[in-house]
Amino acid sequence: MTEWALFASTSPRSANSEVCSFPHPQLRQGFPAMANANPPVLVAQGIGHLARNFFREVGSLFWFVVNTFEETFERIQHGRVPFRAASFFRHTERTGVDSVPLVGLVSFFLGLTMALLTGYQLQRFGTERLIPGLVAIGFTRELGPLLTGIMLAARIGAAFTAELGTMQVSEEVEAIEAMGIGPLRFLVAPRMLALVLLMPCLSTVSNIAAIFASSLICKAYFSIAFPYFLDLVKDSLLIRDIITGILKSFLFGLLISAIACYRGLTVKGGAAGVGTSTTSSVVTAVTAVIGFDTLYNVVYTTFYPT
Image (cartoon, rainbow, N blue to C red; front, side):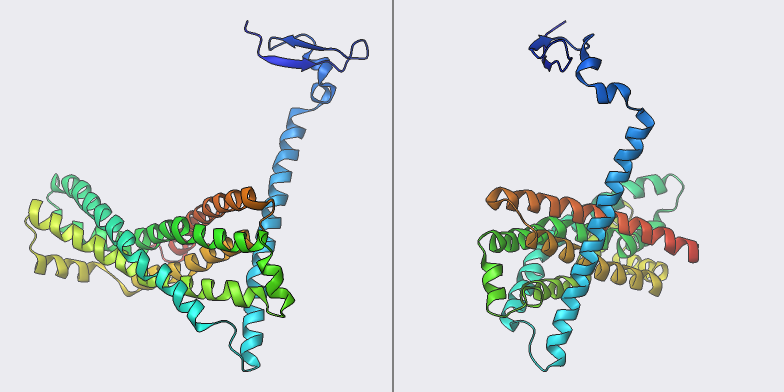
């Protein structure tokens, strides 16, 4: 067998290192703790360690958001502006206006694909008229907010983390604190507010782009005229579907902005730490958005099964 592991024996008889193949008869002597460990105990310890870290991170993120709101509203109560208006509008432009082409294009292509694939399946049963309702409900309640959240987590969340992380490692955040300015209300609040307010708008753009794309497919492949298409959409959509999508968008915006800013202000390790935190921010935000969306759907269908 190919020799691939360098085994350092910790046996009391020998302290020399030897190259060996795996498995090796001395392996269990070299790792007595593993030899005597109970596998279920190791698994339980690993799960407990992961759970402890998870709840610690969730608690830290929760108090990060609470402190941001507290610091911001305390400033407002004293009749002072918590952050610069120019900073808020700059983040609004980058978060909202600059993201419209990306969100619209991706949703348009996905709307084409969804209408085409579902249409051919429904055509087998003569129910092509269900295509407009499926696309409209699917995007308004589910895919619109979810896709927008994932795209903004990758695009805007990464930018927020990189910006704040660079400020953290270059000690700009400490300089702001030294001037008596709260970094949470000055740096975090405008970013968080911009993303929370614009997420529903971008989700609406996603919905419109997907529904328009599906109308083109319905006209070209299934002979559904545009006026009839709109009538089918209006008959299928309910007010609670629209409210659900808007509510999800607000919550996704809060999640993404909070995670991105939190990761940025807790960067350690210089430039390498900024890259690591940026990657962690995107992965965490996307996972949180999908997980929260699943939890929301489970709770929603439990109380509103129809």
